Length: 466
Image 1 (cartoon, helix red, strand yellow):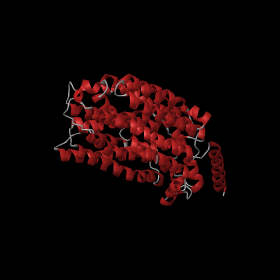
Image 2: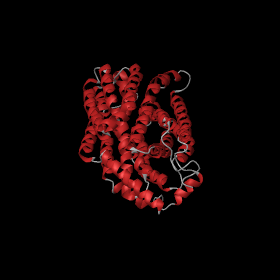
Image 3: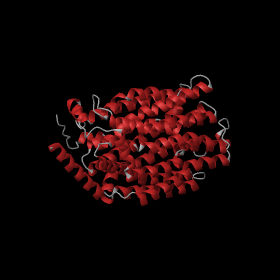
Image 4: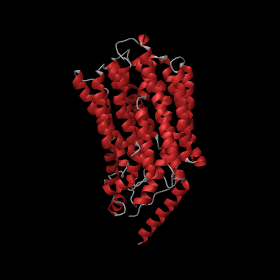
């Protein structure tokens, strides 16, 4: 039974990214509050936190290419090759994420539970997130489709910040009036992960019909052209200079940007007015959502690479500017962050489109569909960044004289400068590295992508006719 993919529908186009909307709630809880929960709420030792979290993220980083390769290589299940993982792994995400924000037993045992659950929750989320990300190639039929879908996904992701800013952050304080501080974080982990699971299931429904299932999936899996092995996966990576360029830049950048999100919570606890924390996220999300919505159109007009460079370059300037004003003026810092978000929203959406172009190059080069691996490889720098966060945040806090028992009003200038370094200075350096690598190294034009896609279509049509 031959499978024919339909044109991109309004339902698929507009609902694609809704699971990323929910994912952002979990990601924000982890990015902004996990390290704070471990240091200030659970009050676990800094050395133990660094060991447990870095080991968890290191294991997940090593496993990420394996997860993406498995999605590419394994046979489709009931809901197709990608949608099945989105459907089935959601409940496992809930269980493991809740346990990550639970302090059980003495410090040593609590660190073991947190570290092991952190590893497992990132593993299960990688399967759902990578599969969902690969739907960009499943749903699309052209570079224009990929740009639009990447823009929709980025729009949903950034829009989550608007809801999160006032639906979650202020309620952390309010909930502490009716339950213990530790229970508050466990409860929020439960709510956000269940919401993510439900939105994953909505995504499966919205993408129905774009991926072969049943007999069509079996027939495609049995086709020699569709069978993907380890050699094909390795070729799609190491014979793809454009993918290596993106990954190289992102990996180097992630070493410097790792502590940025976690530093936000420490900043508003020890430096800025905590009541402005939700406002920063709200305003940043508004401008980010607007820029992400128009990112696809902008990418089509000036090219995805140019859009990425504009966003990265603006981010570097904004981060350096924030590092000079953050201690003395939180409103000025927020204003600069909003300008940064306006350009970074354009960059993020178009970076996904560039990965989609790398998928086309990989298929042209290898003759095999390794899209799940190529699209999923962009999680590798994210995982490396998380691994570095587990090391970087406790390290900088330790060097800055951090003590969770010292009242925020008594924080030293040395500690404040350490937080600003995590928040802005290091991310500025990382963004500059990424900008330079992309500017000089990424040479795959959209005209060349169109030529490659045409050759792929002609080659596959000839094989089908034979």
